[in-house]
Image 1 (cartoon, rainbow, N blue to C red):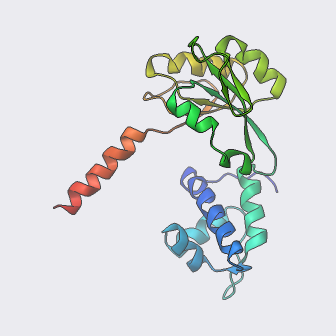
Image 2: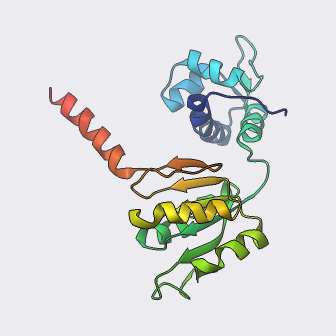
Length: 209
């Protein structure tokens, strides 16, 4: 599949479509309409059709999409036709929980390194991986061909860690620290749980009038 430019909002919905497709396939549905897919991900059918059109697929009017073919097209668009090496920096409660998350491997994202600077963490194990000092990061990234870094450090050191990840050649960073990171070349996705809770608070306030 040739590279296509897909709007960020559409990219964000592709994993939702893929999960819905896999669920529908497990239920025995080989052909899926945009309406069925829209109901599963809580968007309208026109938006589904528009998003999927960026993949070069348009379905068959009155019939829908072949779920197996569509699933493969989404995986190709998301780069999920190969495995990705991932490292986690900051092995506190959140970092340890992510390191233990089994579904990463099923999605072809494999945790290959855990790093911290706390002497009490160094040498401990989570599953098959030993927590190593951050000074080993560059060598390990090169050895394992790591492409993605996850930051779960305290806010005060997150920018420094992001710079280290970028200096190692990592070009994709998932940031759980409560700060906005500045990078030159690396793409950064921020997961801000506090912000998400505040947004939910807004909707609760709206519900109360």
